[in-house]
Length: 408
Image (cartoon, rainbow, N blue to C red; front, side, top):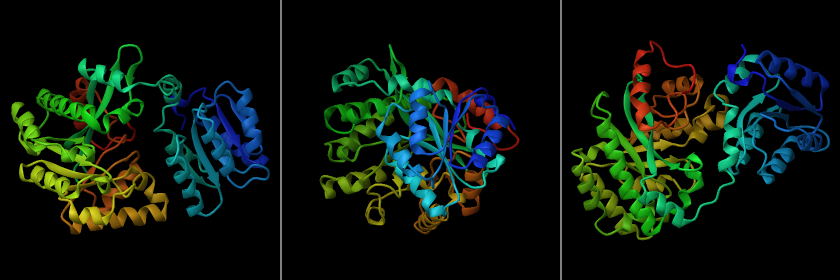
């Protein structure tokens, strides 16, 4: 039952029960953990963290005398230098446990699981097998970085903002359906940087438009380079809604796609928060014209922010992407499962394709299959990959007789 990536790693177990501390310690040791530190409540945990060089995993109870687990997580959220995976264990009602995920989603902490007591070895194993403890050690550097719009403009001019592709597969037979293109910055000093470091500079204005056109070019080139993959394939790219009022936007997009000898149907435009359309009539007209030219139009992150049934009824979408918040671990949360089920049923009645984001485990996959979801995207299938790794991933995916039991 041991997990290779967790061999010798450190954990902090926060629980006021010595019996629970002992039982969880035994479970973690069986998975390969090396150093396991103990704390009796939230304040004790904060004190221990000041003394410990690094903790890879923090496992905390919620209901404790002194500082409880909810306050501990809130205090950790305020101190952004803490970089670790966090898991919650408690015997309280499931809807209370779900609140912890909501707190984490609103901040920067990474809560990887909410486990009901008594903790089972298999549940702990399933939660940790998809996590890389090296992630936070690697991420400590880039999380401290800050870039100006001029830095990002220079990166664009030097063609350092490149697409990484994350596969989307059909759930019925696990065949490759297409990709989503996600931007990465090949920084000459800091290596590959995720969009959180710079994407805020690409959400409006001329820089956003210049980037969108350049990224569309790069995505089309990428699709054409994948010569060994089955065709036709599609690729989704994100578009800020602020660009929908751009003059000649549709014409320029058609020209770019045709320049690469691709049909417009090969590109799916993902838009979020359509409530923020600055000129509703023009924006809706642009979406309609994109549809007329053959582009797909997807509502991204359905169920979060300002995505709503009102937007769904008035925008000409071809597919809905259900946010990972309602996908991952839905089988353990009645609330998540109810929202996920209703979203899928509604999409099917509207004749829209459904794409589930954040599929990270076999349990996620099985639940979505039972509900009749069409397409899946997430680390259970593959992380976003540079273009030169896509064909190797596809060959390995095809060679499997069963679906993978681990992320890539």
